[in-house]
Image 1: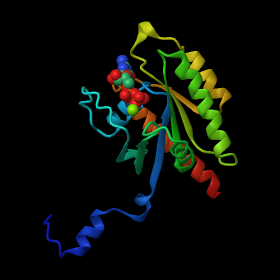
Image 2: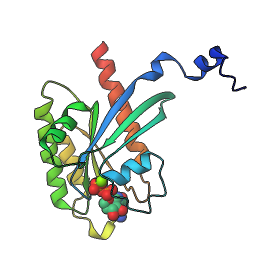
Image 3: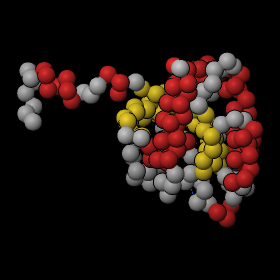
Length: 193
Ligand code: GDP
Ligand code: MG
């Protein structure tokens, strides 16, 4: 295919159909050090995450195919960008879906995840927003402090999905984002009917 700019019909075709254009805003929440930025980098395709760049905040824009349909995700890793109450409230309000991350090697981050779930429920009371609770660092078998059963039991109590991941090994990271897209679609479909 030629790259002639005046061939407008061609560029219309290549931008895809209208239905693809919906962008889902997904927000990462969780205590410092649990692996939010690492998960975001794997999602964003920056797989050589060997260097721990401690940038304040990032947003990742990526389209993935889930069940043969394309979905565009804007992933916000901005929860720790600053300590202002304004930002926290903004985060709680802006998402179409949330990923609440704790580390399976850190019990207090697990307790913090429950707190965040409660805050989120309060901020978005009447809405039924998709939430996935993520136990990250599943590769650190010997320093585990939170069992799989505790994680999934917590998710049942809080009425959200649950998955364990390892950003380091890229384990279940793709499944996590597929899960988010499926949940968003489910809620949307049930609203439309
Ligand atoms: P954030 O503060 O939540 O953004 O956490 P980071 O992504 O900065 O990760 C904190 C530290 O945990 C870094 O040193 C990461 O390399 C490490 N880390 C993140 N995810 C994993 C994981 O799945 N397994 C292991 N072993 N380390 C991880
Ligand atoms: Mg971070």
